[in-house]
Length: 92
Image (cartoon, rainbow, N blue to C red; front, side, top):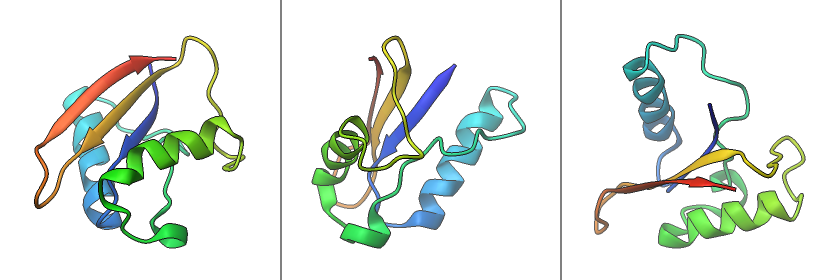
């Protein structure tokens, strides 16, 4: 099961919509709590730096509600103006 989604954050509502559609594609009605770490409220739109910054914050325990363990499956995804649409799954 997918543990975390690290996504480019220019628009929180758009990201929430993307997550809803992702889970709907796989027939999952309930989106797990804390699946998508958010930094936009603290750091603003940090463009392409969002994903590595979020990942760094989580592995350094700076976001206590977001934990990663060896073997967890995570998704890195970017979407937005001036960027290609990219996604990659990674096993921690």
